[in-house]
Length: 261
Ligand code: COA
Image (cartoon, rainbow, N blue to C red; front, side, top):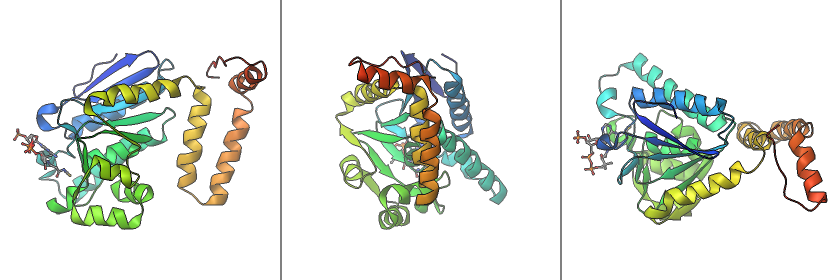
């Protein structure tokens, strides 16, 4: 597909695999990676042939070892705000975008790496993956949504403990606290993530989009607001060809053929 300085994007049927490709720097997020991620996800959103995405890191060692410390070192306050907001915008695009995104965490996911994985819809991890928010050891805090997404995923106490200590969490522990959905042997990680992506890609794109929308936007509001979003999404789906096809196929005892409209 398209060329990016810091990413590989490969399409296999309806699934795209995006690989962050700076293995010599443990795929650390510099401005170029953040820019490329924003552009790549915008292009994937616009590409109707892609229905689900897997995001991973190049090399054996890391998913993403954090924001690029050598770039951040000289930032003053206004550059710090701008850098955080730029990352937040790109990560929001991943979370609030219309297509399912699985993080396949193949190694270290530290700082911006854990934050990026959390912006995906859910996380599959290699048994040798390690998660953590070590920013406190650098005299800073997470700036790409981590202080918000981590407590929403694992609860306030566990989020505070991770962010205030900077400790690393092995994959099985990340699974135990609900940060990770599945832990698999390293050599099976990508295949396992792709298998789930293929399954999701076989559903109707409009229903996938509204399922994500209801959950993500609903979690950002209260029960009443969330249920209103759900009901409106449900109503939108009742106007689709896919709803007609899905229900007709069920009653005719055959598999549905979704047209994504
Ligand atoms: N930013 C910039 N460069 C980074 C980086 C980061 N977040 N993480 C790793 N790198 C670079 C290293 O500087 C090194 O580059 P070099 O070969 O030019 O010296 C290269 O990636 C390999 O990392 P190295 O530290 O030598 O690997 P290691 O196996 O000894 O340690 C880690 C692995 C992940 C424990 C260690 O790299 C680390 O602690 N990284 C920073 C994690 C962090 O604090 N992230 C949050 C940032 S906000």
